[in-house]
Image (cartoon, rainbow, N blue to C red; front, side, top):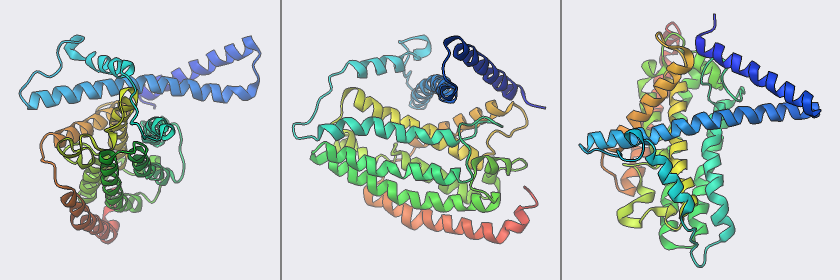
Length: 352
């Protein structure tokens, strides 16, 4: 029997098909337009839900940081200060767009939306519930991380397009950090792939029906979690945007809505990373108390809270210390996790 959330999603899907069928019949539109229109409607619905959740995540982060710092955080704009995020977006929209004198204007305009899209696109591969995903492939995990590897190149382009010293320094720092931490991220993922016997996100989630992979390979989960935070370039690992050294790094010469897109990209990556961790290590939508999607969303936001907690708890290392952590700590731990998974796989299979 389907859980209530899946039944509601199925009913919404039927209503969308009925409305589109009525519109197409009324206007006499060609049948080949039906599928693109259907996909567009789903994207709009997802975008609206995602936007609301993103506003909640930003508000939650501000409130959580304020509580831990023993201050009130946002309180004035809207109930509990929730509309402060909307006010900030409006402020960025109406701010003047300033170019450095010798910047490459074409790349300066192109990179911000391209980087935001690249950070958000992988979410289409994440299964949020049984039958609730945009795209399922046998190699969806490979595609997910292939898209993620485009980010360092785009960050380098962002710094180069400004034709300024501090953005260039920040861009090279970011490129080095992102490339370094993709290695332990990929190595930690191999343990999950070996246990699930698949590169498909849905199959990996279904393999955790009885027990989460985070419980049978905690070292791999730890490495993946830490490497994911490093990939986000968020405090305390915000070496590419170190305000006391290089202002805000590769973002320095961007203003207005372009800076807003970079700011939004940070939260896109936070959401996608937490969703991937939930699917790969926390059993995705499986749980004893709540319907599928609710359980996935709860675990997703718990992971985000943990990432925020790390942000406001630890100090920022130097660039050389940051890279040393990747090559001398996380990569050996990821290899150890892979070794243990290979050795213990016959015994772990009895738990799955």
